[in-house]
Image 1 (cartoon, one colour):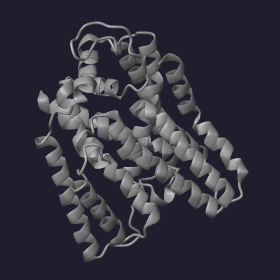
Image 2 (image 1 turned 135 degrees about the vertical axis):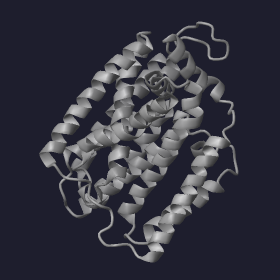
Image 3 (image 1 turned 120 degrees about the horizontal axis):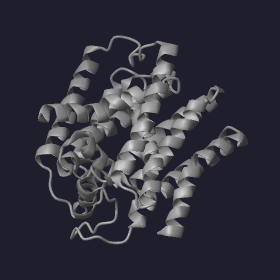
Image 4 (image 1 turned 30 degrees about the vertical axis):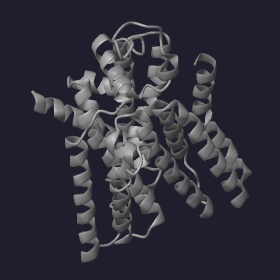
Length: 348
C-alpha cells in the first residue's frame, strides 16, 4: 500500500507538472526539454492553488473545498495541455545539438553523484527546525481537521482566522499532497517533498545555465560549482543554502531557491528576444504571471520581492532596448502580487 501511495505522490509532483507544462511548450522552443516542462508546469499549478485556496481560507471554508476546486482546475489544465500536444505532436527537443565529449559526460556524472548525495542527506539527516512547530503543524491540522488557519498550531485549540499567514498557503499545498496520497503530513513535508523541491532547484539553475552558457562541458561545470556552493553554504542559519537543503518544506525556501531564480530565467529569455527582435508570445507572459502568483503562495514577502525584481529589470530593459511598451505587460504580470500585497495591508 505504501508503494502505491509513494507512486501517487511521484505522479503529483513529477508527472502532473510535466503534463501541464505542455501548455508552455512554445515559450522556449530552442531549449524545450522535460526540465522546462516540469518547472513551468509546477509554476502554473502553484499559481492556480494560490488563486483557489486564498478565497476559501478567507471565507473560512474547509480543505475539502480546496481539493474539489483544485481538482477541477487540474482537469482543465490537462485538457488544454492534451489539445496543445495533439496540435503540435512533437516530442521535447533534446538539449544537446551534438554528442557530448567524454569530459562532458564525466562532469555530468559528477553532477549526478553530488545531487544524489544532497538528496540522501536531506532525507536521512532531517532535523526539527523551529519554524516547523508552526508550518508543519498548520499542514497537519488542515489535513486532519479540514480547518485552515483556524487552529493554534502549538496547542491544537480553535482560534480566529490567521489572515496574515493564510494569504501565503504553501503549508496547505503540502496538506493537499497528504490528503491526496494518504501519507502523513509530516512525512510528506520533511522526508519526501524535499527530494522533489531540491531537484527542481537544480532544474531551474540548469535552465538558467542553458540560456547563458554554451553547451558542452560548461553547463555541467556550472551546476557542479552551484552544488559545491550549496554543500558549503551552511555558514549561517539564514543562508539560502540552509533553507534549500534543511528547510525546503517551507514556502520561503521555495521562494528563494526556485521562484526568484525562475524569474531570472524568464528575464533572460525576454531580454534575449528583445535583443534579437523576436516576438514575445502570449504564453511567455502567462508563465511569468504564474511565477509571480506562485511567489505569493510561497511567502507574503514574495509579492514585494518579485515586483521589485521585475520592475527594476523592466526599467533597465526599456532603457537598454528603447522599448517603453515593454513596461505595460510587465506591469500586468505584477497585478497578482499587487492584489495580494494590498490584501495583506488591509486584512493583515
